[in-house]
Length: 289
Ligand code: NDP
Image 1: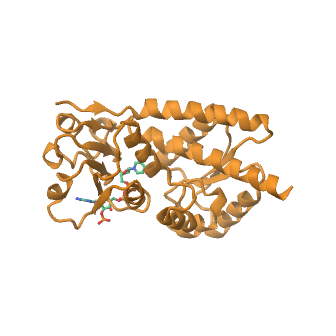
Image 2 (image 1 turned 180 degrees about the horizontal axis):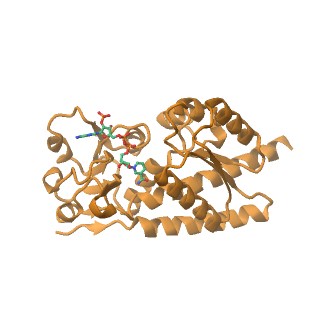
Image 3 (image 1 turned 60 degrees about the vertical axis):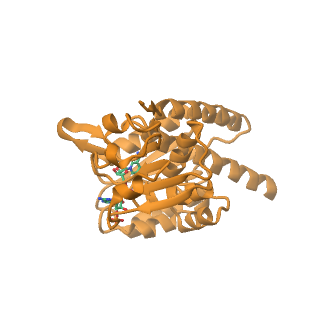
């Protein structure tokens, strides 16, 4: 049996078209969603992510402002910039591209972003609301993963979902969202002995580790839905995931490729959150009027 490939690029394109139409409508009512992206330093990967985010905003009709700061910026200066963006009427969402230079506390910067402008969904208030199932901005990559699984037609409820990785950005939040979708969830990490014994129980397997090709066919049960979040550069600058795509696709029922799986969904969900932020602001303004 050969798995169906989950075309993240196409799903993202479909959702971005829905977003573009929504933005058009918002603009007609006098509101243009606006996103500020703050980039500190010269990291090439961060630069290319920021470029991709600005381009996606432009295509969707969202106003974007990329603010580039030198690596020498102090934490105080960066916090002041965030404060200005919190008060900026044209900006509905603020994203600070991570990682930040070592002398700046990422936690302090994330917590300085107003929760209503935290379109990355990393602020502790949004994280807390996500955990209790209250309205919030869902973190982009985990939200994108859930959308991809749903669009395969797979019902998550009652399934055993196994997540490999427990980072605050991917592993933990995606586990929480799967739980909210009524999956039975197991979370594995670097101290999990006999990883394969757990992953082979998965109906839905989400892998977010950052180790090229660590999950082989022997880790996967026949018919599992496999979502590969990993992005790894190997010889020849080639991008590969955490899953051995060629062998696992012979076992799984659905599988995401790398690139072209989860990646395009992350930016798409950022656009979605930015539009939600603009809509929220508009509702608040109407209530105050
Ligand atoms: P982190 O490095 O923050 O977390 C990696 C996790 O993997 C940790 O929880 C770690 O466990 C676990 N781990 C490490 N080795 C093993 C092992 N041998 N067996 C089981 N678990 C292990 O990474 P991120 O979550 O930030 O990212 C993971 C991958 O996803 C990366 O390749 C990243 O580039 C990619 N990514 C892709 C995105 C996209 O849009 N496509 C977005 C974000 C990330 P422990 O906690 O015990 O150390």
